[in-house]
Length: 388
Image 1 (cartoon, rainbow, N blue to C red):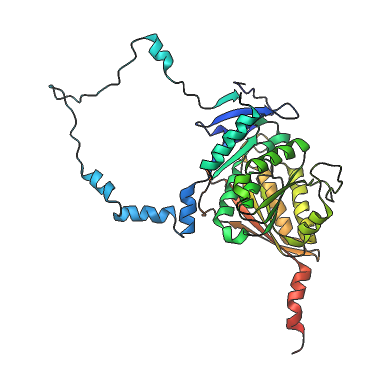
Image 2: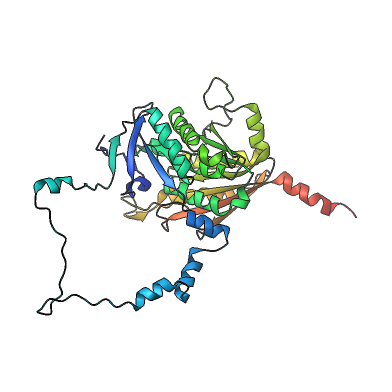
């Protein structure tokens, strides 16, 4: 497959569009006939080392300015004399051009994005994966689609997942050993990153085809999660349904033990780039409220969103209606008073290190929602009300 045909309702993630040097190989067709591609995302090891030592790239940059790199200073002292011809003009050495047509054809052609059908067998893929996992311990392998309709955007990789992954890796002590729920997980990239720290990650979305792709990505990245002791459970969670599906005959359903574990032990909720439709955003925040109100302990939700600016005929100006509705829902959540839970909403400054290769633009934002069941607040104030 060499060309993707774009229709009027086709959406393509900037993560795939802005990877000119990536080689996207079509691995298979999914259950609905969409091409599935494989991309590999490498964690930036330098950011990990700097974070573990408490240093930043900005600090290292200041050290360079102070002269801690003598090699750079020596290079500055070297004076290169230009080569002049006998008339005093600058002489430029040009690369020799090929003399024959054969030499011209033999040059490697450079394409921004190469889309091709993989001819490797499954056994070959497994051998290649084993080799990659042996030498590239910080590589995340993700199956995804490329250009989809709005209904299938969860099958692509989005920048919000990278931003959330950066924050998770920068706060390793916070998430270590925790039980975590991701809503609208899509390809599962954020859940895989979280499983390198957390004990249990419930990776949830809807649609058997999407969940099957997500399950494949979880299996492909066991080289990252298993050494850390983390477990990713891919499960169905529909925001439009009040209860979790526990029917054993349904694929990706919940067990009663998992439902109890979710309610008793979940400390964190994750969601990346899930608020792009007003009705879905309403259902998402209702789900947040319903889950947090049933949890037995305080829970913190981290929501990554990209503010996408568009020119609309209705406003005759640049606007971001999806983001505006997201903010409206956040405001409603914080001011809600129903006697069950309280919610504190705050934006997280995007000053944490970058661990993934992507373009962290200023329109990317991370928000923290802290939910506290009121029965826990009342319990904590009882001792102060009792007579001494």
